[in-house]
Amino acid sequence: RAQLAVWVLDTNVTEPSLDDILRMGKAKVFDEALKNIEEEIKKRGLSFVYEQIELPLSPVLRRMEKRGVKIDKKFLKELAADYHKELDKIAKRIYKAAGGEFNIASPKQLGDILFDKLGLSAPKQKKTAGGQRSTRESELEKLRDQHPIIGDILAYRELSKLLSTYIDTIPALLDKEDRLHTTYVQAGTTTGRVASQNPNLQNIPIKSELGRAIRNAFIADKGMRLVAFDYSQVELRIAAMLSKDEALVEIFRNGRDVHTEVASRVFHVKPEEVTYEMRRRAKVINFGILYGMGVNSLMAALGTKRAEAQEFYDQYFAAFPKLSAYMDETIASASRLGYTETFFGRRRYFDGIKSSIPYVKAAAERMALNAPFQGTAADLFKLAMLKVDEYLQKDKRGYLLLQVHDELVFEIEEDAVKEVAAKLNELMESVVSEKERSGVPITVEGKVGKNWGEMEKI
Image 1 (cartoon, rainbow, N blue to C red):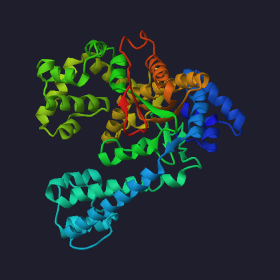
Image 2 (cartoon, helix red, strand yellow):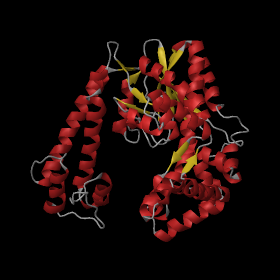
Image 3 (cartoon, helix red, strand yellow):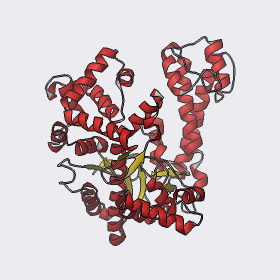
């Protein structure tokens, strides 16, 4: 309770220690410190977040941990064998290109091979704090076209990470029933989202085939099915809800595709004339803008010239003037107050926002811009978890197992899937009343299957 109280007061203090509790409670005794912190929570208008979201969420997370998720050990074992074989193949190709064996995992040895032996170099190459040339993924991406070894190194890293973090590690973490019990860290992020560890389920990759395959190892017990609900484009919907931008609200209210509609406005064509490439660019802009992406980052993400990126940027804000005004106001208010607030009142403080060092200030402004979207999504999720848990406690035909990014995963009795899933869907979509969300529908997409990787739409 005290940890949660400290964290609600200042989300920058993740997983608070006893010292943090005493320091923030300005007291030498624990009970007195907690009392002071809880009074400060009331003063700052954080009572809803503390009493209606965080405190009741604790038992829900404990129930999820206790239930755990069933793992197909045999599938993981076969996956491990395949991936280790593939890793060896990639290593051989790397050694051949490098003209000999070396430790691929050592940044120094890798740097010697790439930059000295093979003579690769990129403009504006970054160095590490220790003065070595960086072999970080973002730096290697710049060299991708110069030599096939780069693609192999990136693939090798991805595979090694999947093996060491999940595939080789999970079997040792299972209980007698082959269930995996991750630990949810409630006060573990600055954004308000739930984190998890041993293993960190938030990091199971979904962008690549290799990463996605791991999800097939997460299975439903006998007589059960896994059901997953994903909040679709939740942060963009929240941006429409918070900014009350009529054009953006209208897109969602009419159930149209937001990336196509944005493309149509930015590129001045009819929605039906939007090409795949235009929609892809609009998607980059949509998500980029929410994360405070400036013209330079947009230029890099789109692979265009600066003038073109600037044009997209200007057109975007011309199409959504109220969103633009809302974002300006968010930064201005964060600079004035030192914090931002979510729709539900959760605060996040930004020390760097008053900094005289330009890049520190700019980084703080970017985070401040995204915090209300990301934080409101986190609050929404937690409220949804409380609602579905309350229902499942009474219904007894299903369990909430996992919370990963924008998705909740349940295990539901096979013959009750249709009925229970319909109820869960309704609960998750009605967390915020229509009036509060300015008519922007918050929708979820449901899927069902025997494992988490191979699911069909409900």
